[in-house]
Image 1 (cartoon, rainbow, N blue to C red):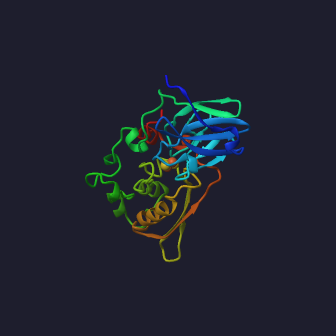
Image 2 (cartoon, rainbow, N blue to C red):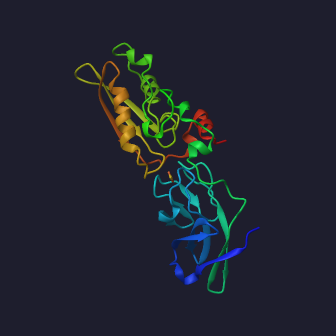
Image 3 (cartoon, protein in one colour):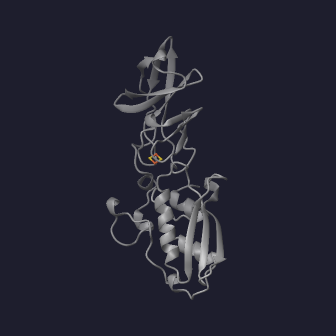
Length: 254
Ligand code: FES
């Protein structure tokens, strides 16, 4: 078992406050909330975001990259896109000094969630060998695109939207439960206007514009489709229980 290491004075941190520290070659974030101190690996398990740059709110800290939240007391991953806990370390206050002991039984070094979950992008993109710089969020066209004019239905729309992949989670937006509502309205030109209410796994999700554009692209390709409107809805907020069992399987959530 490792020893406690002095990381600073209690007065080094405001309350609430956080600071970066290095303990036995491990980069950690030390946090102070309500007069108590907490310590986590400075690593978001989604894709290595620096939690020390995140927003501290009561006993949670939000990754600055895509908004995953972690419980600062346990390291538990509370919200997507993180699906794995980060490592919490033991903290002791001795007088005005703060000491940290590294939790050696903690999780393996940070990896992107996809890798950590033992998944390969081939699961979601079978257009060739995986190359991180060539990820696409649109699946190859399906025969459904050739449906008869006038036959646009909500089922067809939802099926087409399964071609749109969340670039952070590599799961399609329908199975993630991001599509709240689909309205189909007749347009004057004989086409169909489609209005979609879509949510995000996190209000800070940077993939929103991309998923909206891709949704419009796949639906706009349907014969007989007119205007496609996509509205982002954050109320009610997305929760993991909106995912299908397939999506949970892909993300390794049981
Ligand atoms: S790296 Fe932290 S949420 Fe993506």
